[in-house]
Length: 315
Image 1 (cartoon, rainbow, N blue to C red):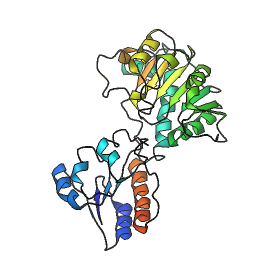
Image 2: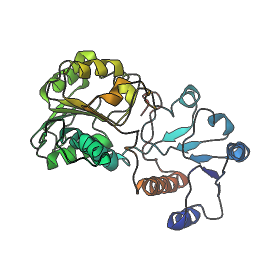
Image 3: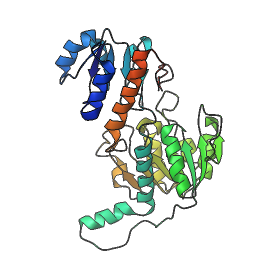
Image 4: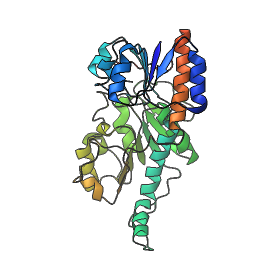
């Protein structure tokens, strides 16, 4: 078999790769699209982001190990209709994406964005926003996958009451106080101090957060989105924020990225924006590569792979 590595594998992990494949299989690490086109003709396994324009260059492909958790850009029609096995990196992003969610929450509740602007101007002064303590908050988490469960873990460190909604999970984890089906989303949003979004982007979740359920939130509540921008109807969120119907928002993702320079979100005092940065971590690529190598061993032994994506559901 031939393995195409879109991501660099080096050091001990490269040695492990070579030990796994032995003399029976080969790997290549092309540096350009032209090289992918040439090497992809007889490639069996692909590690990286196989975009819709790359997929036709891999006529012999049998398994793709994606390097991301979200599959909204991976499950295009040709992929969905193929027999190719697709596995993702779900669960490997949980820690640092949850960190980002709480960084955004703490940033907005403690006025960090205002203090940072003061620092840029060498100005010692107070924050224009109220200083809110999040200890004891009620938190609503949308989606209890790897990221959602890491949010739960952090929430419990702040003695929060955790209410979660999930479309598929029916058994409540011990550290979740209440678990509801997705049709109870608006009810959950009406009861909590902060809503954190951790579900994948699918046709079912596109526009899931909208004027109707945002209007149910308390005026002192916050919305945090570190999942995918189109899960939130951005125009609805802007109207809700402008009307003061919620206290603020922390956004790592937006409906269209990059966010338009004319968007009102940029100038709102009660909004913190980071540029789809939640996936960043010094451990990210090491974890993903180790996961790929574990799955590669499974594949070569004929064992079931971890994190197989249901291409019809999109995750």
